[in-house]
Length: 73
Image 1 (tube, rainbow, N blue to C red):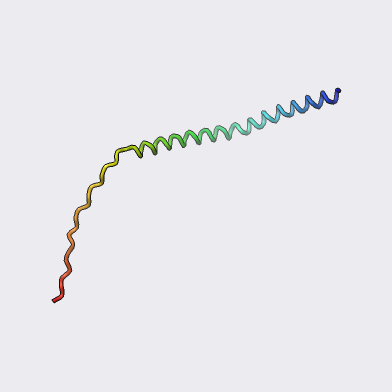
Image 2: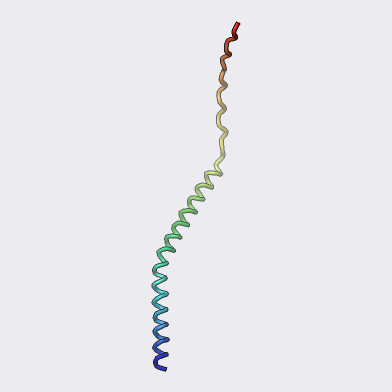
């Protein structure tokens, strides 16, 4: 009975330490991903605003006068 109690206590403490250590390692990655999502949302907003700007017609080109080639006589 005593051995089982020590085994259960050891497993529970090991599990607790494992969960805490994994959460510490993963928390930095989660913050990196959240900052990337934030940056991408800002970029999407800026691109959307750029698309919604009224598009002005470009000024037409000036007509070019072609020089007629001389005919051979």
